Amino acid sequence: MWKSLLLMIICAVCLPAFGEPAAKYEVATILDVKPHQSAGDSSQPGAASYDVSLKVGGTVYLVLYTDTSGTGTVKYAAGREILVCIGKKAITYNDILGRSQEVPIISQRPATTIRQSK
Image (cartoon, rainbow, N blue to C red):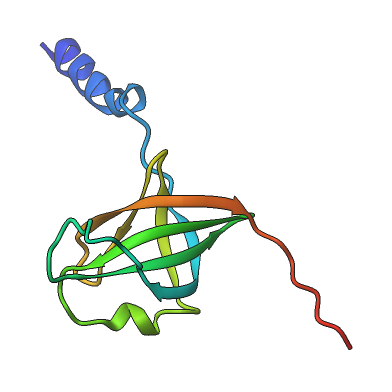
């Protein structure tokens, strides 16, 4: 009986190692926020949408953020750092209440270094 119990415990401990890998969250810096210019294709009528540029590692992503809460605080988020998980077509982040939110990726490009002239 003890052997079977020990075997069950070992299997239960090892099971997560064979499951799906955990999402890899990375630090992103919000570079720019601009109102989204749309032709009335908003998924949420009445909610403001913004084009948000995020720099993650050596890549800048442009995502479409829809302000469903109506606070408009995203307009002042440039320079802020957040944790994000990069997917193929969307970026996932946790809002201030800890809820997982997903925003679609519009485009991505390599980050370039801007040199300041003296």
